[in-house]
Image (cartoon, rainbow, N blue to C red; front, side, top):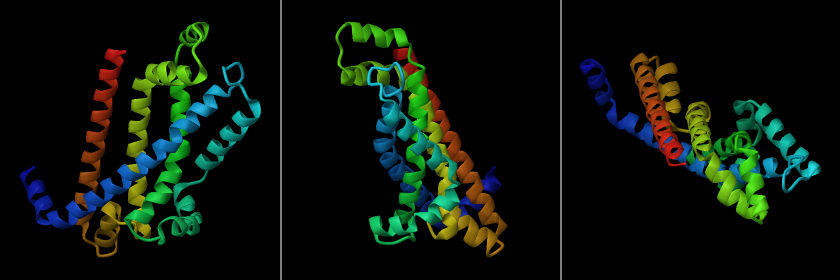
Length: 224
């Protein structure tokens, strides 16, 4: 362990920079994707047949958008939307540019996560709210989302971990972060120690994120 720590410290500045860029890409793209993904997932659920805002056409369109977007491999999506990325941030290279494809890939993923979580809510609770005269907005805000919070937390944790993996892929096209370091130093310059260090950091990062997600979901479950 001491040997490993010494090895990590020896390239500390480079690895810290990579870790910072990875966290920057993941957290910003996750924030953007959550803003769009949660309403998307809620809209899919409430427009289903026999739901309080039933609308088969809208439900079909939204479901199709999610399925199509999730069917495209991330590396292809990343390249295909380069013109859109340039339109949004003015460039297709760098950590800020990498946020665009990461967010675009995460939105349908979160939409499906939200959909699955909301479907786990007991229909009797929703019917009780309707019987008490709650509006659709009140049912969504005060019943559906609060009841699904533990499941939503675990789903969003899974999304963050997926984005960590995607952030390593964007390193292949100059996106920065730990993936970029692993490719430039570990693969192109045959510095196996750098490759090993980036893998160790990514493993530790994922373990921390998963542990925090499990802890928060447990707290919310007990509070419910």
